[in-house]
Image (cartoon, rainbow, N blue to C red; front, side):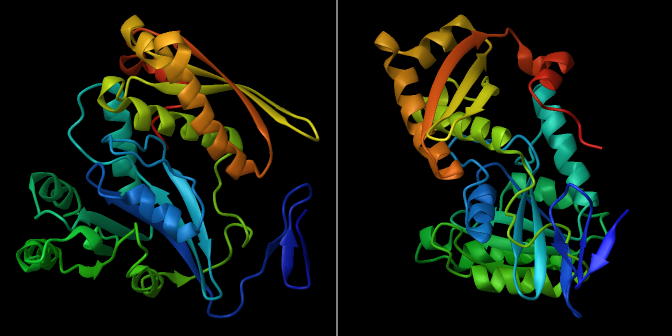
Length: 318
């Protein structure tokens, strides 16, 4: 039974969630866009903590991550989707299907584009997917810190895209945070009055183990680049906490022996570099000392197998 006292309500055994004050707004915001336009960087900046992985390799984000930003006037729950593209394998189909579901299941859509280059076919493909939605859309022109001097023609190409759907536009840099207060303000304007969905101090609803796996995968993408692009999935096998140390055992799953060789590297050098960089990130996440041990396993064609995908945590979301 729920108990209500002093404007707070709680479910036995769960975290206390305060009652929202009058005029408080809340809602779910979908961040969509082509691969690598800066969606994950944007969400990390907005919530003030690294919860989504970023990398120069396309299609870095695999699971819909919820980042939570709570201010005095609103609670915004951000859903970071995989970059929308035409799928080439079963994993691609699952990712794109989940992104399309996100479009219809949120209160506001922030369609992020790369302001350093003009509007292209990929942006127009996403715009075509948004034609039938009734969800309010804001077109966010990112990477203004890398725009050329003659950026007017680039901006104009996006203004034309926004005009078709009569979308509001905002310009910002997720990297430098320039323009982000305006992004927040625009998003809040589109939200309805609502409750706290999560405790105000929470920044994500994803379990720590999931984020640990994502931080390891990020370092693989950063250090191996094109050599082992998206044939990698990380599973966390063990998290053992002691007062002085957290022990983490993780398996890196690849599709081919050659990829295993690249990941291990000469004399184990690459795996050591990945482990060292990932350990630093995980220590920041849990604010404590971490012992990280990595294993590499070959799972042939895991991206094409529904069962393998499910085992590694990739399912079509309801």
